[in-house]
Image (cartoon, rainbow, N blue to C red; front, side):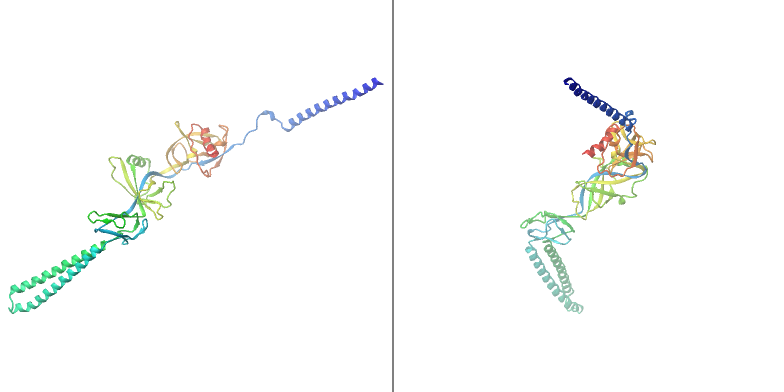
Length: 420
């Protein structure tokens, strides 16, 4: 009985182990079969990636105005120095510094007591001269009929007429002296010679001003419209004129628009106009002087202020513009990526001209209708792989300028800009 129980107990355990191993092998084989049926050809290689989408710009020739940016200085259209025209002590300042004044407005009051006294004296002298004239005229009038009847001598009558004429001359002198006295009295009130904005007062109450020294008391400048003076080298002007194949961008200087950029980089909303270009070249610096007239109703431009002047002096009748971010610049030349007929990007060497408004002027290397990649360099992971060209919308906020020697480096520029 003991041996039989032992044998009966061991037999079922061996059977259970064998059944478990059989089931595990069956499950493993079933799983392999399922994987093979679910992914046929999975071991043949990685799946193919779809073509990268890139933004392209179709090249089209267009007239391009060649713009030049130069430094300039602002100056007032009219400047008037307020100076003393009589001697005296300043009693009052009648204006607010930095305000707008009108022509004829009173600015200073000089002590006028002396000039008022001189005016009163001149009036008295004139009255005396007029009285003498009246007396001499009456005597001459009485003597006139007497000389005809020989009641008085001809010499006495001649002396009477001469006295009348002298009295008349004295009246004229007295009138002139009176006018001078009035002018001096009027000069005691200093008035604005022109309308404009007045600066700080250069004298204070109690200061003694002199006519002989013509003491400057204030400065008035008209800034509603200002001049911007700038210079351009004669060599640059010559190269600019040679670069154009046609006529100047404008028919005359008066119609040439001028744009002004302030020190903070902002641009004035109202353009100015070029007044003239000097006909002579400065022998010491080789510069040509130019002047522009710019409206300044908001007072943003102040005399002496530094600005940047941008103007168009010539025009290319047929040129192409390309955003800076599409160009790779290196010591070997300037290149772009052009999408070919098979949608494969190819490097193309181009010739660039001036840079304006974040765009390059393309002078050679591209044909009309070609597609230049402007955006999506970071998506081109496999060199030589075809791409999907999409029209570039120009929505990039901060174009990046490529400066490496290969397309991959050019692709990294927008990527780096985006990561920042």
